[in-house]
Image: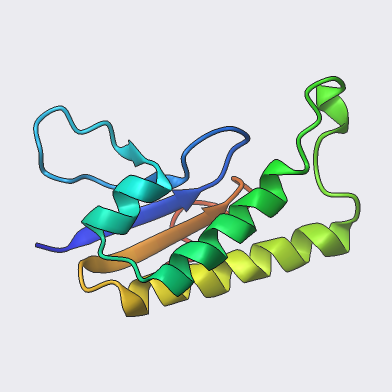
Length: 114
């Protein structure tokens, strides 16, 4: 079995999207589920968690409209790290057949696929 994965980050949301083939599959999966199902190594998991934590830190629950990266360069760097992590996910997971990386929705579906 191989799995097509989409990575789409949102504030306070899981960012792995894939079908497990199990009845009742919710499509979105947290890091713990993905680690087990996709057979992810500890280094990749640590790097994905740090990358997501960086995005989550941009959320301002009091002034939602002020949420986001402080500078365009910070956002660009975060997006690029996500690309690298997506490519690693494809290389390092024995189950992943492709990764469609959407960042936080700023990359159109199907334009950044590994």
